[in-house]
Image (tube, rainbow, N blue to C red; front, top):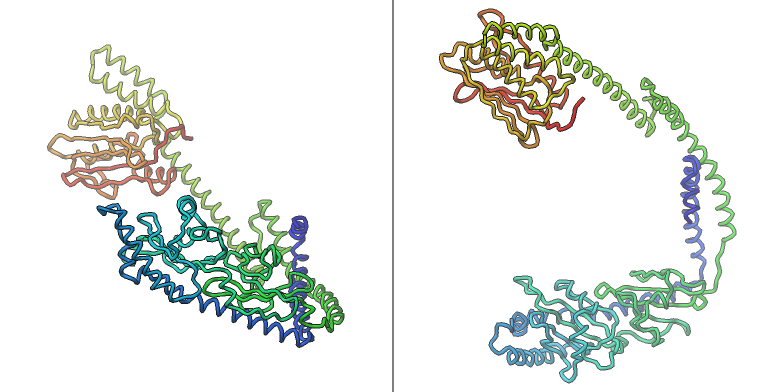
Length: 600
């Protein structure tokens, strides 16, 4: 089977279409041929089958009619106030539980005899189980109960579990042995219902009615349609409840009727289990049991199938025609697919400028339009990536060009520093030392990324230079979380913010400036904040041009440059934000992802 399936999968699409079209023609013809053949079957077949169907339906109707009163009686523990109150009792909270339970047992037994057993001749025995005390609170047979069976197996029986799991619904149970109130374990069928508190939905127990299999025989007659006709009653678990052969009772229906047997609830002919046998079945809507009649075909009609040879000839002729027609249809479908396949091979080789026939109609036209749109979007995406990479490269070049990196400046500053030291100019020496460290940072560090520790050291030297320039007119406070010192970030992100805070925020103020540089981790991202108490910086991040000449452009990359670099490197969810402080001044913060490894 698997080999045949694999061969079918390996067929080309054209051959699959031919096979499919052929099947769509053959199958209806076979059905039509079968219907025509049945028209010529002897009228006795129809008459006897109809009679068997009606007999099955009547048996099912009798079963439903007999079980209907049991459905109402199963509500007895809820409808009767005495039994309902007993079912709700918790004997563990009663002073004399054994005495109370014994009195309740007698009450329930009396009610069973007067309120249940008198209403139905079909019931053999009744059991009411009390969930709270795990005991039988009432039973129709007071003379005998198998205590060991009750203790060890009763509540674990599949039919008991089925009743309890139905949560108050009416549950018919197929054939099984009754071992609780019968010493011999007689075969019975049962119906039951879990007793649920209608207000709290608490499980109070269940009620079980047992019906002897022998009493079920009163629901149908022994009339046979022929000498070899057999009748079976099958329960919801597909086990034989009734058979003329006593040895078959309780066996699975598949062992008696065959493993391929399937039931038919409307009473029509179902299928053959042998070449000479028919089966008729009807189902009960209440109990889900089935009445099945098995009639040998020879007893129904004389076998005469007319026109079989004609039908076979017609099938062969139509098969040939269907193959020819399907081959033509398959070719019409496959030709545009072959063209599409050849062009897609060109695309796989890198030729993205392939043009497709977008005027093609039908599904092929839809595919062509979709692929053409996809290729157009791919070309646009490549162009956009190229433009973005070019812009990123230009931004990086601008950043690098704006950095003061020549080695000779660094060497010259060292010479001046030693001259200042020799001449005793300590302030000049300290300023040159800080400036030299800044130049050294720009010269030494290659690539785009530095550690937070390196960035902080650079800012300390840079602010020291600004402090000399502005004659100690501002203070700097660093609030850097030690845990982030080893993280990496883009170079020169803080310097433009500090530069703008000092050049624009502290200009013209009559009090000492205060600058706070904070770096910390927040919600999985790295936050770098520069806060000042100056005269305020425009929220749009565009400082006004200084009126006293051009501002010092030392190491200033520009705020827009920083925004673009962050967006290109990390995406639009990160960036730079600037706003005024309520108490005066400006706060600017940068949010970038946490980077713990070396970046390119």
